[in-house]
Length: 321
Image (cartoon, rainbow, N blue to C red; front, top):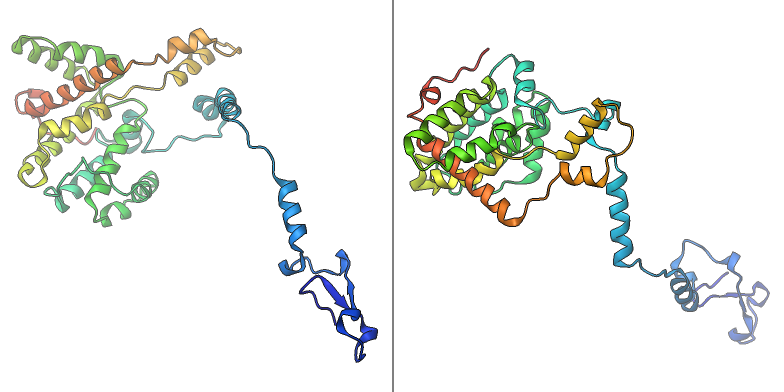
């Protein structure tokens, strides 16, 4: 018999002996102890093991340097696409032109379905489009929509999840609803002091939008105005909705990806210099970023308030090509 309580074993030859038990105890070797029995290790061994395995923690500077090295060396999305490692999603993270060309329409099916579901289930919901929904539920709708499956979307009862999915769609478009090439002109038009001149400039800018962007914008503005018509219940007026959707519809593209694309087309094998990276991805100051967000919100609010005045926006939404 072996008594492993105190790390010693009984000598079998002393079984039945009348000698004191203390004389019948002998130390046991490491090989005799069960490795899976935590009680077989002495306290001294446990302490010594924990002390010997302790290693010095890396400093804050070391961690930061490792992260910088990782972000500098990781491949761009464009290079992953060229190698076939990354395949763009058919709905989220794509472009309006690619989605509509694939569906043979002028308004993505996702926009048509989700706006209809939101309007049928809860335009009176307090804080609609302002309150965030459950992220995992939003991602579930996203994944199924990319597979042309809208069961989770239609069966979802939380309005904030549905509105979160709609905002995510516009936020992840590779090219925003308002093309980047026209951002400065929209901002300049909004700053025009004369109302008539401003109206004519906006009318001209709206006519320059691609067909898919213009028809999608018409459907979105009508949906948001229906939401605002229930502002007495949901407390979301036109200017509240404009604050939410301004930066979403005017978001900027990834400069690093654009630079990689240009270098690839030009046949450059060398990595872009730090000067080129700085020029391609300028960092906006806080004041400039705040100004841009304010102007974007004002533009969306102006379009919401004037939607019934522009002939281009009053026309029926053309869904098919």
